[in-house]
Image (cartoon, rainbow, N blue to C red; front, side):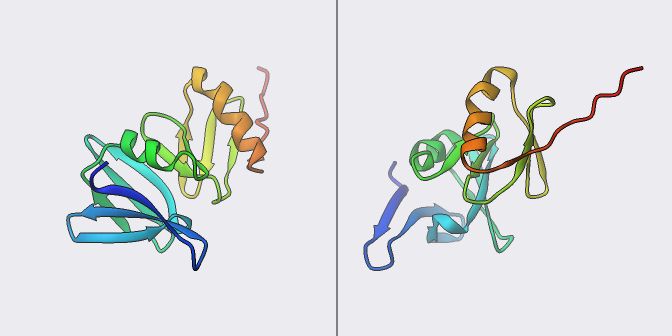
Length: 131
């Protein structure tokens, strides 16, 4: 990963990622990243301050770099920061994260929902009406 590296700063005990974007080189604390979204062969990194950074790396590259740091690949389009709390509905296989509703594929749900529970995401119970 030539232009995507994780950096540990021993003085602050924070972990950051070094990226090259269209606007130059940046070092971003992992705590500042809310989620990453796939955009073809590019990825969009969405920060807590509502800024978005587009990089020329796939979401797969970001997943490989960040999955050991409390980031979870929910589906083919989203990688979320588990430190940013959200909720989920296991029945409808949806994760509610910030302003997003992320659909979870059935096969992936067996992996995703136990991890969300372990990270204290709240489960929303759906009310099923019988007709």
